[in-house]
Image (cartoon, rainbow, N blue to C red; front, side, top):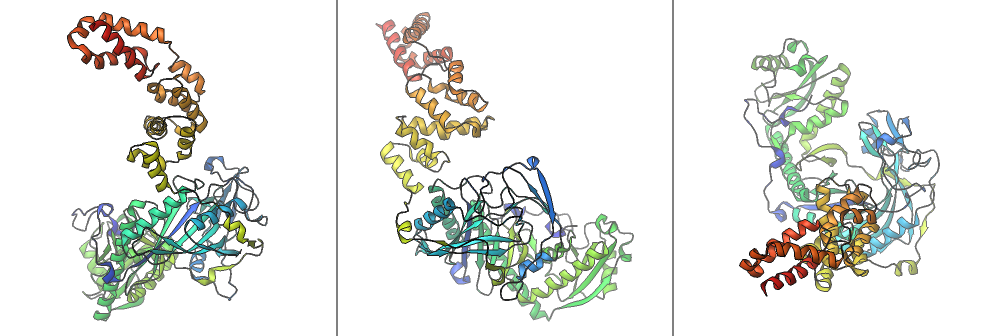
Length: 640
């Protein structure tokens, strides 16, 4: 059962705007005291994982070679405390299933063997990134354990290391700080529910955390964009869906720090910030209104199963147990929207869902969804609810309903605190839902199986910083004469290195850029699997075109053939066989002679139409420039 306010229809059937398409208006962010920062988690493209020698490639779940079932428990920190986020996760008592593959996982991922020493390639790359951001390195790097028991780490913790401190983001007006850079192992990938695949577990990633210096939603977006550009400038980070993850930390005056996980879409980051600001403002307003009304959460639980024995609500009809509580003075506030598609009822429902129920009903939204006005009146009468009160229902098995009603009482009481420190997940469109409390200091403790890594000063001094992609873009325009838009596209392309290699080998920059960026995109849209086209194959084809061994016009078809498994040379011979100058001249002379009357009538204007005829005849076997030169000569002969 879902929290019914999230549906597209109101109780009277009126259509509502799709929350995904709503854009929250800008505000005076200085006045509301916005403080924001981001955490960026970027996978590194290394040969091996961080603490073992397994490759860093992902496998399809269908390729699994085994599975393990386990339960995870939270452990106490050195201070004798259990982290609040881990403690809440432990309440689920879920059995965790993990899939593994023999060629991409080992005993380390399965927590059956101690970790190997830290991967030196990943360590060096993390230092290069830190140096690019002007950070100060830590002279001795220690590995820590970060408590994580949601099933994504088989050991119950994630290994992480503080590598550098105190960097800067130059693109933000007035400057913005980078607090820290950590090198850590990535978590296992969730397949579904409590099932995880271990191939991703252990892939090295850097976690870059900014200071809370970002004062507008646009600055958050610009900071994320800049750091992403800087990471890609190394040419040694993984690309594609899921390889970079962005978390946003937000607070306003009178609110609290909230961490929003999994903001994948860069274009949505500013909207996420605006929506969180709106959520915190509305929660503060609701708190103030509750206090003004003298509202209370009455903890008496009512079993109202019999009241809905003959209900038309399919959800309530099939439930074994229906429980209710009365919230004194909450009327109209549980159903109040706090951000697009979300209400206070949604926040309460998030807590209830931790018990396995689908959601809840409340009288701010009833009668609706099969619940009649008469049933609502009986419910209010049975619970003693006054007009200023709100009644919340939850329906499921008795065990789940009892657990959920306890969580509903807990979250309703927390409404008097306004904004809570918590970790939230992003929903489609930019709104968010509760995940767990913010973790505290108790989640970190030392790793005893990995020795510290020393960083000599001379090692740091000798690290070479790569050229930024923005600098490459400018250089491609000034030195290679590329169009600015094409220069931007190729500089930020995953195959930028191939482009530079092609130009170094004598390929014309425009030809190389158009082929590597535009042509590959075009044939991908046509269904070609461009991932199967190697850099060497593209370079071989471009070299052949440059030497006149293949026509530019045939490049798309040749690349499609290569994507289908053909050899480059064989594809060239079949699609663009070499044609001698004599043979080409003969074909063109024949075409011009057969159309001599047209040529005499049109003069040199005949070049365009005849060019099309010749190109069709040659079918991409000859470069268009060569055809054009010979065709001009033949037309001149007829005109003279």
